[in-house]
Length: 583
Image (cartoon, rainbow, N blue to C red; front, side):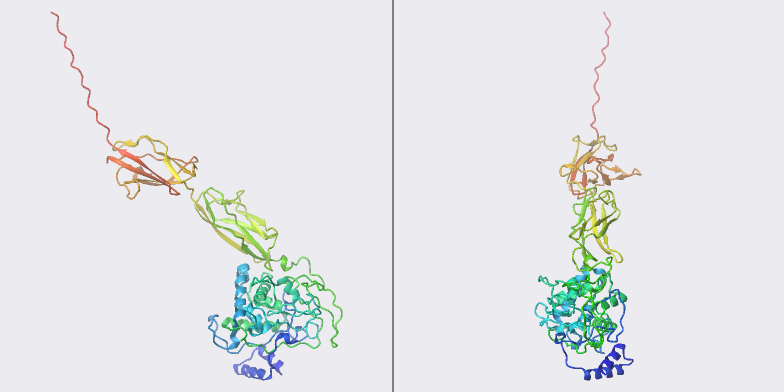
C-alpha cells in the first residue's frame, strides 16, 4: 500500500486535496527512520524493481545504483519561486540543511566555479543529491571536520535485490572485503571514489565520509563530459550518471526545485532523517555495469582496488551468484577522467605592461587540469593577441598554439609591444566542444625618457618681428641611453615651472601659418634627437621661456630673447683739404 501511494505521489497529485490525503496515508504507514549503515534499505536495480529508466551517455552510476531515499519535499515550499535562497534560520526542519553540510555544498560550488566555470554547478543540486543519498549525512551527524560519525555505509552490493559488485578496494573504504558498498554522505562506490575522490579540506586525505571531500568529488563528477548544468538535458544526464533510475531523477529534481525556492541553515545533527527507502527487487537480473563507460568513470579493473567492477551472473529466483566475469574493455578512444580535459586556469601570469617597441617582461602562462582536477599534459592551448597597438608574439605572429607540458602548464611566446600606446588583450583557449577561455588585459605605454637637454649653448636671440636664426635642438635619454620615439611637448611659458602660459613673445606657426605657443606632436628620432620647428618673435621685447617635457617626466627650460639690434653711430669723416695755390 505504501509503495503504491509513493508512486502516486511521484507521478503527481492532480489536486492539493488528493496530494494531502496521500501524504497522510504515507506518514501513517512508514516505519521508524533508519540510517544507511543499518543494513539493506532498498534496491539499486531499476529494471528489476520495475522502474523506468532513462538513457544517458553513461552505462552505470557513481553509486553503483545503490539504494536511495524516496522521501519527497513537503507540499508547502519554504518560499515562493524567485525568492532569496538565503533565508533566515526559521521554517520547517525539512527545509533546513545542517550547517557543515550546507557549507560543504557551497564550498564545492565555489571551487568548481573557479576550475570549470562553464559547468555552472548549483550547490542546490548537491544538496538534492545529498538529501536523497544520505538524508544530508543523516541529519548532519558529522564531527568538527565534517566527517560522518559513525561512517555511512550502504548495504552490500551482493546481487540480492541490488547490483552485484565484488570487492574492488580490499575493504579500504567500505570495510567489506567481499562486496562493495556505497560510502559516505554522497554514497560513492569505492571504484568510483578511487577515480574521483578529492581532498577539499586540505587535510592530506581523500575521505568519502568527509562531506567537504565528498561534495567536491560529486560536483566534479556531475560536471564531467563537458556538461553545462544550467541546461536541463545536461542536468538530467548528470543526475542519471549518479544513479540510473527515472524515479531517482524525479526525486532529485523535486528536492532541487525545493531548495532553489529557499532553505536555511540548522545546527549539525538536528536535520530530519528520511524514512522512505527505495524498494529492492527480490529477483534481480544481471546488473548493468555500475560505472560509466566514458567519463566520468575509471577503466574497468574488477580485481584491483580503484578499478571499475563488472557484474556477475545470478540465477533468477534462487539468489545465488556465480563467478564474476571481466566486463568488456571500453574503446580505447574514450578517455578516462585522468585523460579528460577539465579546466583552464591562470598559472600565475603577472601584469602585462611594456613600453612601446620593447619586449614584455611577463609571459602568459596557463594551467590545464583534467576532470579530476589534476594537471593535464599535451593539451593544445591557442593564444591570440587582439587590439590595435601593433603588439605581436615573437616571430611577428598574432596567434600561436602551444601544448601543455607534463606539469599541465603552457607558456605563450614572448610579446613585443607595438609602437602605439594603449590597451589590448591576450586570450588563451583550450578544449573542444565547450572550450575554456582565459582573457588577459595588457597595456603598451608610450616610450619614456628620464632626461632631456639642449645640444647647443649659443644664445637664442631674435629681433622683434623676425624669426630666430638658430634652430633649437634637444636630445632625450633613458637610463643614459638614447631614447628614440619619445613624445615631447613644447610650450612657451612665463616662468620655468610652466605655471602660466605665455600669450606674448616667441611662437611657432601651425599649418595655416597662425601663431601657436604649444606643440604636442613632437617625437625624438632614432638617436633620441629632436629639432624643433622654426620659432618666430612678435613685437614684445624681453626674455622668455621655452619648456620641453617628455613622456616620463623629464623636462628642460630654454631661454629665448627678443630684442632690437643695437643702433650704431655714423662714422665721422675728416674735412677735405683745400688746395692752396702756390704763391
